[in-house]
Length: 463
Image 1: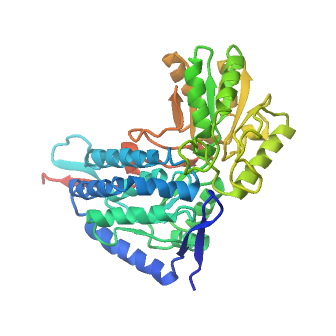
Image 2: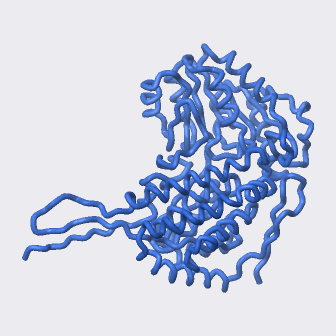
Image 3: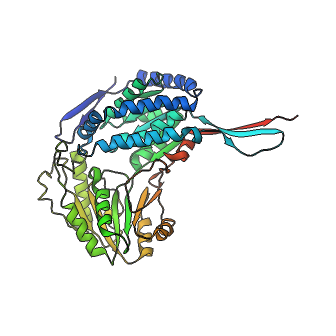
């Protein structure tokens, strides 16, 4: 008998959504429908697929206000910021639709007398997308739209914290006239998620989540030869050089650390600041952090909402306490943040100064509004410390010297290297990670390579 799941809103701890989990029969039915639909969909020209999916984007964006409020109620992001996710969804979706004809076109390999030769990109079949709650549409759209454009069917399993996101995808596709069975969502238990990954009906898995979750996905698929894309955690660093424009660096890094209450896999957690500008940078960073307004995310003047749940807030407090026990200094007094109370999801932002990269806060992902700042002597020390971590999703540098940024970036083990910005995905660039931040790629033309298989055509025309 299928169970159920509840979505507890972090705003007040009440039940916001409750859904029944899919039964075994419903899972089997979804797989059968997806495989059948994929067989016809792959024969539709890419341009025709794009027209249908563009209508789906139109339908989704038309409900932006409703969708934004649902984001706020499900995860606690301030309502003043939630519409940005709809804009980001549209940007990524339309870009991936626009580049698909070129990205999926046959690959010419050069002329050879008496032969016709080319490489064709074939869809994989059924893509199973497992999406997280923290950026529920931005993480899901990275895989859902490109997978469909590539000719695959998609089954989406969204986080139990954000089940409405899967349902809004389905509504948009239905409004656009997407053939039945091509996109489906299932509310699943962890056990059934693993079982589905291991089944013969799934040809590719796109997972975004924790390192532990990524290992579970790999284990579930261990007996099968299918593609797996893993976008996992981060403990992302930034380096402020002495030639940086400090007001810009401070403003951007404060936002990069605390947007979405710090619940971003590519948010900034570790900041290395050159000794020449360390004092003014630190003072400016702390002053700006103190200006945050923590409160009910439905209020217009709130710009820092609760973290996703009270237990997450407790865990973040424990991480900060552990960092302090290991020599870090906490610079933000939580008392002025009246909404911050133990036992709730409301948590004041925190800025820590550290003197050792071995401090746990410089090594472990802290999925909350916490930034750690450390003084460095020069570029070489910054590079060494930035690389001294198990993660490698993004890294950033603040400098006026582009040549130096490229030179230093070449030495950083990361999937994306930023200059004078952070915490952003450009859909024209490959989104990928190294080390414990995962493997595979989404977005850009390169992302389509992971959603298709190459098939070589070698035709001898002269006999």
